[in-house]
Image 1: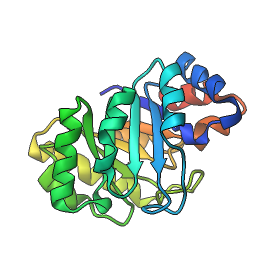
Image 2 (image 1 turned 90 degrees about the horizontal axis):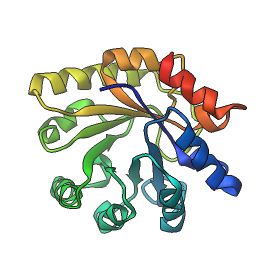
Image 3 (image 1 turned 30 degrees about the horizontal axis):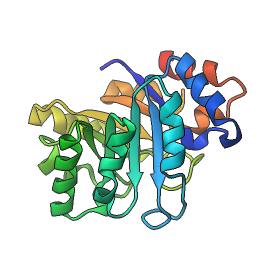
Image 4 (image 1 turned 45 degrees about the vertical axis):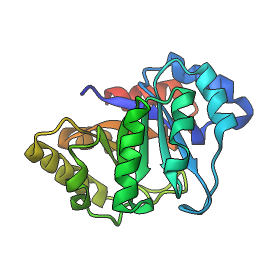
Length: 218
């Protein structure tokens, strides 16, 4: 798939949220990324449905929601109602039964289903699910905080996942979330990743439009 840049709205300026959403609309970014944190699965709380709705009302590109929360099945239908196109839940937050139920519900709601894995979680745990999902989210940092340093072992995990997906002959793409920069994005793409979440790399820049373009074209 062509490289997709998905700016994480968690790093936007919430005092000027509409401005930052319109900037993403004008940019070469492909998606809006929504990081949803509950203060339980991860230490921090990010934002809830009122903020998601405000973003959805302005966004002119697909919405990608990443649920870093416990009991994610309770909220899937509400994200679908907002118009979210892709929704991922964490492997670590669900039992096998609940994970399969989440995948089914995400599909029943008309969204693409993804499974996210933490840095400590081996790629191989996803083998039973690859035929059931549209994408995998590989965390390049520990979930819960923006602006962290990229974990180098993420690169090898992307390579392993790409081999697993090719071996299973399934149509499943890889998203990398956290620590993505112009220094590593080309190598991650070469190894098999296609979608790249960029928070600090986008919104901490003096020129976010140019930062997004650099991530897209480097």
